Amino acid sequence: MTTTSTAQTPVSLYGFLTPKPGHADELRKLLLDLVEPSRGHEGSLQYHLHEQEDGRFFLYEVWRSQEDLDRHNATPLLRTFMNALPEHLEGAPEAYFGAMRSPYPATAA
Image 1: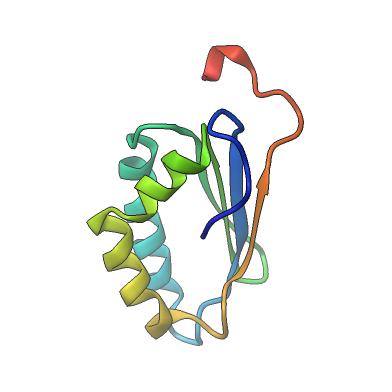
Image 2: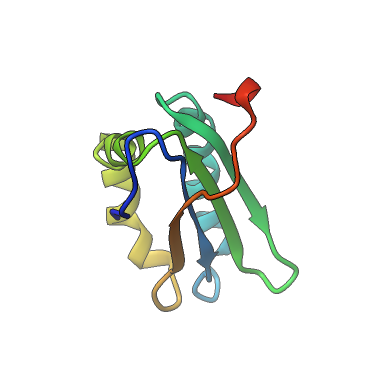
């Protein structure tokens, strides 16, 4: 989960996760259990979970830097989540990464 950016360029990670039939509740719980701890990780600027009408989940994260995102991805919390994820997903996650090109509000940094 690495993108090319400088240490001070905010990066975003976003995408859709489709639960297997009968796994929506379990996937929802796994995803919700990530929200508050992830928001507390150094460099977390935004961390949101949405549920679509079609049953997919949309996760949106913004990190102060690639280094902060890498540190977050290396936590036991994320490793445990990633190990449990395939059991509940229909196909691969539809994930996107990118360096933010619009300025991030100074009050949030």
